[in-house]
Length: 286
Length: 286
Image 1 (cartoon, rainbow over the protein chains, first blue to last red):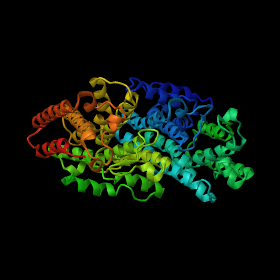
Image 2 (cartoon, each protein chain N blue to C red):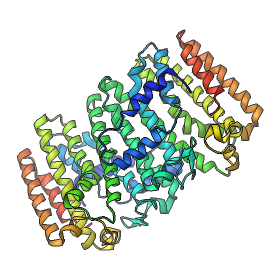
Image 3 (tube, rainbow over the protein chains, first blue to last red):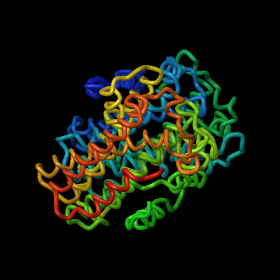
Image 4 (spheres, helix red, strand yellow):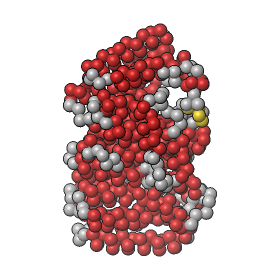
């Protein structure tokens, strides 16, 4: 993705780690932080802020925290005891470069540091910081992403209903994506009505992102995806495509796209950037 | 340890996890949370609060967060890729009961939830919560406990100087113990001078705790320790005992004990409980 915010985010994130305690640990954390992630979550957060009439830069610490958490989750998901993946985004996975023990610690470090990072942002008030960490830690913890990952593991090699699969996705990927919208709303100090609208929009975008991911898993190439296409199907994973078939999955994506577009236009007239982002999510090839 | 705060802490912690998203994940987290930990960190935090003339109960959320983080670190340390331990406190380790993948996620969940837990405490102000999470996440992250764990791994099978070994311990175990003192000081709204004194005391107590641990590693029994005595020596780990010998390690512990006692008496006259706790740390048999 080429996006006006990417450089801002990458520049900001390149300064996250100075003065290492363990140079090896920092190298492992930085390896995955700079391994070519699409930065979709930070871009969503900053774009939502802009849509709310706020300066995008005010969301950089929260955006970086969410990207650090997303990155840690990939490092741990790739471990031999989890998905046992050798490649991620076309590069060797963290444990294949640094070893399992360091990869576990790199994930733990990124997760812990993400909260320190928000707390150290001197441009935000204490009330806003508390609300940001409350939202992010809820979305990432045992009631959010980590709980969703457990449900996903429990679901392998078992036939799920569409409702069950959607619950897995809602938590495994949806909660953290929705947190991007909610964090932006907190920084912009939106009222309860607008926050509820952002909550709905964030849920739709998480769903949109997941359906597209499931479609890419069967249609994407190794070159573009950086991992083997069809790996979900091979692993007997319940996805929109394996459950509904490819044409119905594409139709579901189109339906959710139109619902999200409708929600954006209800929220604000200042919506060009967000509309472009929704288009990108649907059109992306990796 | 029998201590007046233990029941308060255990009762509080038994209500941490209601309404599970994944029952299996909650079972794994609760297994390690209730696996017979000494609760030394929560007791230190609440005792420091009492010493500062504050109600101990005001520190329960921070105390629970630190115990959750301590617990997650043990789960991850015990993993096959790390220390590969089958037993902890005389019980099977988390991954030996729930499997590696679940143990990784249980650790991730406890760590993430610990911050959510502090943020959800409605008895604390936003300013205090921000400071608590800043202290705890710094002490637990890549510049604290996780960084110390990396240094410790890098030090295996290599001869360390005493200064190098102390740096490992300072971060691996010391930072989180010191955080108990600092969190209490923040909740009690101490001034900078008193915070600096708590900082020194916390550092000494962390050191005291570690020297005693190293001594117990060679003197403790499997029955009392719940793990094999002498395992550090077998693993070629640099400890106070392996570097200084047992008599000098005991002398070092006595010296640090007296320094800590002196610091406590400088801080307050209301110091009986803290003095008893220092005595316990030195006298404990597990």
